[in-house]
Length: 148
Image 1 (cartoon, helix red, strand yellow):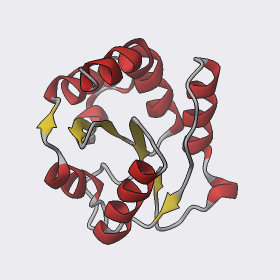
Image 2 (cartoon, one colour):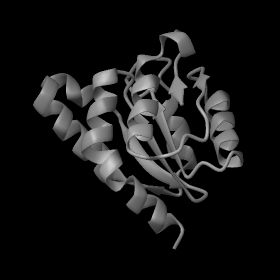
Image 3 (tube, rainbow, N blue to C red):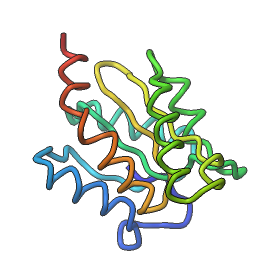
């Protein structure tokens, strides 16, 4: 899922990085959407992904501090369990790459109705970092834990 008020599927480099990274690691893609950074649209996208059988949802965009960045608040309201370690580790790794701008990221993760949900920044480099260093090494494990 890409949350953006300015991008569409033809100009979504971060969404492409997500899809290609997941597929290269052998994960199936239940769907792909570009949604407005709007709470109702985000909640509807989560419901649609759940109905499609998704076990994980990866959002990119809407995690900054701008007025229209509502992805984090919307998802946190849904989370049954938040995974603060994801955001903490992501910001630490990001700081090593880009320095102090890493503190502006509100990347987070949590669980909702048997799914794991990640909220990542909109930058393709940030998406690649999160996928390679944190998400892909643990995604299968996280999904198995949610089915126990």
